[in-house]
Length: 393
Image (cartoon, rainbow, N blue to C red; front, top):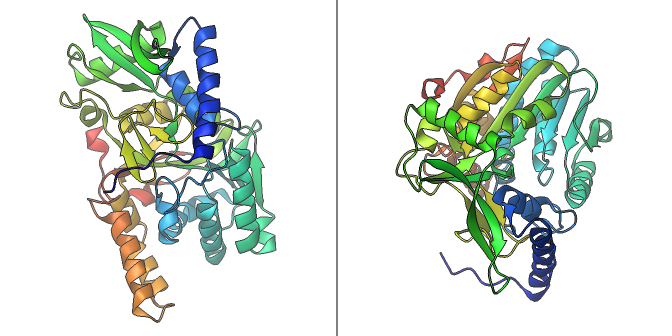
């Protein structure tokens, strides 16, 4: 892979503005802030954060490629999985957390319309004003007017009782994560401070009771203590986040797709520096403190923690499997055959097969990405009939 060139002058100026705001907060906070707060500002600071500003994030021209950007087959398989839930509910909404470019919503709604299972409302919880506008423009252009009329953007989760489906693809990995370290058998937390040259540096600070309790809970679950100098990530806020996005849901299903591991794999002794990394222009960047606002900072998902959060919120665990197993179990072979029937030239056939390969092959997204579903008073186990991984949790 070629070396990553430095950002252009405009991008550097944008990053410098955000960096100045972070330095100001560090000084106002007693000379350091938790790494989770640094990550939150880098990704979500209004108008300046990576996801809040207007630069292209998704696809070949951006910093990474998500499954929906490869083509419609991913969304169509999601549609196959959730259509029976919508049928069982009679009327229900879909709440997508983080709408990306809007491609997923468009492809999903097209397929649900073809199945005769459109939701009464399709709601997108999207914090970025720029992404909202892109999503709106794309959906208005590609959807029939009567389908687009069902789409709305939300500033906050539902506040009144509702039935439906929550969907989040590559959202959990972007939640601001706590970085912890073990020193002299105590739990310390990574903070970001400034060195004598005003550059960002990571330092250790004693952590609070919530983080300590979270780390000790993981150790009890693993039935062993972390070794000296072990460093990794934790999302102590995950149960509260899940309950917040669900809101007062009465009946329905939750579906999460992300990269990560079951807890015993996440916290392996050899993974002693955790999973934190950054992405810029399709390169993995080890320096997560560099160029605030210009690179995606991310950590893998502890799916055992997600299972605990979902069941703790009063849902049943419907299933857990690899992305490849989920797509195969929800008809990607049939979706490929249907798509190939509508293309004539070999180049188009090749693109479709490449799409399936990237979605399902182990060395691509097939095994690295995993899928977890939850249900409340609906049947959702039909979506997880192949490749059950719940025994790993």
